[in-house]
Length: 465
Image 1 (cartoon, rainbow, N blue to C red):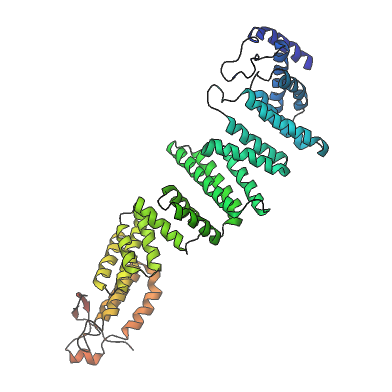
Image 2 (cartoon, rainbow, N blue to C red; image 1 turned 90 degrees about the vertical axis):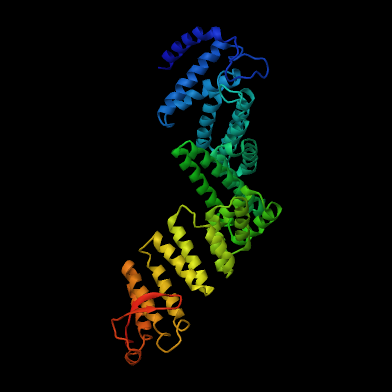
């Protein structure tokens, strides 16, 4: 079989020999005025074709067949004697060498690893540009070299790290996704071993997550779901490696220094906020300050909503209301409802009950089945009872209106029934007594309008003890 292949390829080599004296035009930049097929063009073509055929058979066997052994000899000759013939010499050669290194005994591996690195260096020497273009490929090839080195020899991680770092420095977000992962994996290893500090890890995470987000945005514009999924997986891998370093104290300490240097850097602000949110580091001044700075640069209603809720937690009610009022243009109607309810509760705390009720009704316009809005209004009425009356009857009638709202709450939202029934039972005890009703010439079931700011019609009822 090998003899037949050789005779066939020899004929092919003779037919192509007229090409041997001319340089390749597409992807070959001469380094030493040599020719594409070397000094012996026919032998180069024969060996090139032989190794290619055996490599193809090996690939078809899912890289398990014996054809690899037959490919190595002619590949090595081609690599040594006509290195300009095709870039596939280096692409295929790297795959073959990595496979052989994994199978080799320990004493053979160092020399083979040196050869693997030589393959990448030679690829850059003879094919410095991407195929058919004038685009340099140094960054990509160095990235592949760093990944390959770490895979076959994890102990050489420092050398692999240099390759990967240069790849990222050259290509930035355009670096291979796997370069992100291996670079960060090695850096975190170095940090664990005391060869790098936490600041370097956080800075690298910040940079790589930013790159990944840029790629996701780019692929979303192209509607490339496969690549979007790929970079989301890359982010997940970065998060996994970062987890041991993601304590809030260190994150806040390091990001605070960055923020103080560039408080108006929008990209930095988004990275700080995104990282602190991912790691659930909310209880610090930096998270609030970064969001506030971002809002000044880009006043989005979602940021206003977040700032409003944070200010409520700090009991800065009046300031919180200002932000929450600016958040009601959000596209997410559920969050708009929440904004109205937060404002209603804030005005309740400020004893501005009419404004609190107005906002609760705005929430009900968004979702008429949101029973908690009726609960809040009922609570407002109950809290107003003593203030809204001037005698022993009128100081109690607001409880009728309050119970009406609690009943409405459980009607529109049945899961509130148990809680509302308990609340109704409590406030029924505050209704006027039968004697009081008789004294003021009122009868149970009669219509009655509660005055004061409440100004609602209700039904007369006697207290149930």
